[in-house]
Image 1: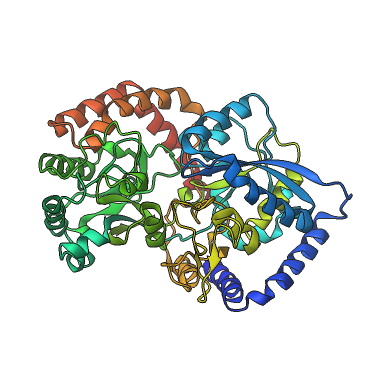
Image 2: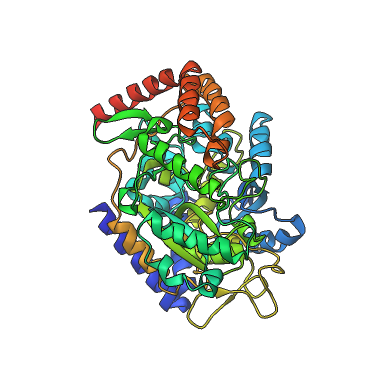
Length: 520
């Protein structure tokens, strides 16, 4: 019932925004009035907050200043708050944000990310996030209404410690392929109807013979992952054989919970994972995989944009096509392999919390509430300043203004990073009705049986660090196809993981899962 109620609420909001844009200001006034009632009387003093945001690529401060100015003009009027926004690329974020926390520097609203050291579980294990339950009651009523039971993902012992980003919950493993090359070699229809690995291999061979890019398959991450995107098991000969597993909040994805027996298991010890690695080796020997994938500093759409390769396997959401085309600057064909369920990690991958170093927690939650309700703010943080960085098409989608391109735009990020994606004007290519489709899809997407449970790493943090050293030693080479003896190397990796304490980690997680299941 919650999903249907949430779908109806968000669908109505999205349709109102899309079809009756003239009503936006009236809706914002209602939100402001509600917040004044919830938050009590304003003392008239403007609160100043520090917000840390992850970006997919470096953003120069000169290029983002006009966005920060626009944001502050909006929020000063709406909630009497000013924000010092710190945009950081992944490398900078993983270094600076933990250092800022350790130095007790002011951060009022912190973004948790897929980067383990700057992830939700890491912050929680170090007691770096405050309980925001009462703050949400007072200043975040809109968040509570929109998120509903999804807040269980960031709840511990009945207390809420963060709010995950809300987007397209239908996630799947897919291969994104350069559409322009497929058209040129006559394999576009083949790709769109592919249902087996043999189908893809025919396409790979065609891309290799064409030679537009020096490689076929590139790495999707900094760990050399090419065809074994986690947390999916991609063994078997058909896509129907592939399946998703729930890593139950393990940001490293070293474990998963098996719904067949409710047991925590080592991801790398699964036979289907071993079979997928053997396929990677086969593709490496066939000359399909980027030879430097294991050590490459660049990955993902950067490699595609630089024409290193033409195919990328990764986890995607509904609406991925436009983001891919924007990121790589080329047409995209998406080949879907298998789907995932909604897991706790769906809301701990990207999201926000208030750290213990916050000096203005109330103002931080007021700002966060706008990230789930205010389209003007969300459009600005995502696409930049309207008329400068983006413009609106007649159909209501976003595009670059005349004379501006992906290469020359000052500011542009991805629509899945900050807050409520369902509130953001869609980029052209996704279609004007993509938000309605995403909302309807969310309502139909099944929850994992372990939704709401996330492992607590604190008791075994040192052993996890030791296990990580082992995985880092083997995984990039295995995932990129460099290793010839796949089976022997995987066995050696698992043996060394156990010696580093993997079984103790599993035992700790199992005890936590058993306790959680007993409470359900």
